[in-house]
Image 1 (cartoon, helix red, strand yellow):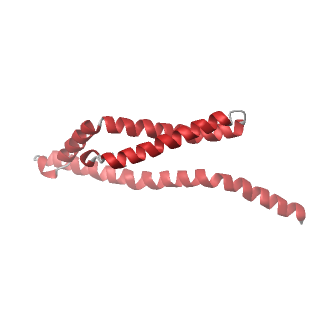
Image 2 (cartoon, one colour):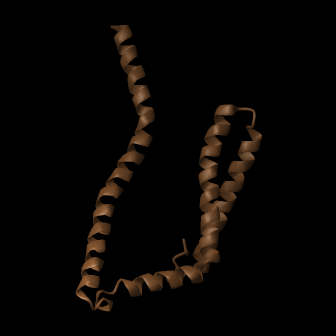
Length: 138
């Protein structure tokens, strides 16, 4: 998307930002057009809220790209193992790295499973309905 602070890409950012802005504006226009349909309004707002949040976040990232670049450089410098001379500092550094890896190994599958369950939930209602239809026809 052209946002990564060390390698900002203006053309790529403008393309994605323009695309997302147009998409978001069209979603709002559609919301206004079908404002009398409550089910559609809820569905539209669910999607459009996320799109608006993404638009605001990428704008904030772009405006603060230099600061984010500096933060990333500071983190990169702090991650150097040779920077820690004392054995206690080095041990703490390695323990925190092990803890971070463990957190990622546990949290990423849990988040994936939560997202999968969220998207599979509508199918359970359809499966129940088809099962009840089969039972009534038998």
